[in-house]
Length: 230
Image (cartoon, rainbow, N blue to C red):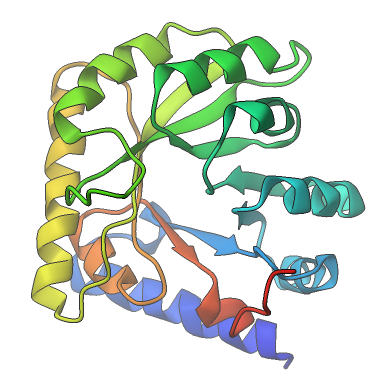
């Protein structure tokens, strides 16, 4: 087996085991392979092992890979910051964007999504643990932003995404992920049609799944240490 194939099997086993421990079906949690800084050949190798969804942080780099791998019919997720001058690229090339944190960006994505394409799946990035220098809408402002995004054509609001500060203790990981789950549940109780909770990475996917994540974003455990970005 190749390194990527072997790693994929290990990560899938981790997800299955975490779901079993949380009394959840493994089918409830999607694996998003974070392929930023890795080349198209690495993505193609993972795709050959059955992985279909890939997350990218660097938009220009991602657009090049999407073009090179168009024959594979993969699902592409933008999980990095989206600035106003990059919204057109996201709207024209990606299937998902996880990092919408203000109405201006959502409006630009809506206006720039080609009518021939299916709606762009969106998650609102929430600053769930209140980091002063982190992107993300404040939890108390999420409901208002969600209602505005839902009304925009060309977009489909799917849920929430979080990137909490790393925590060593599982108890601390669980606490912050449970806050995100509580917010997600509260929004659904208000009638917002959310189905996706994008949280958990290589170091905390078990805690995220225990708290209710429906999509974990894993890069290092699949592809290894990241090459320096030039």
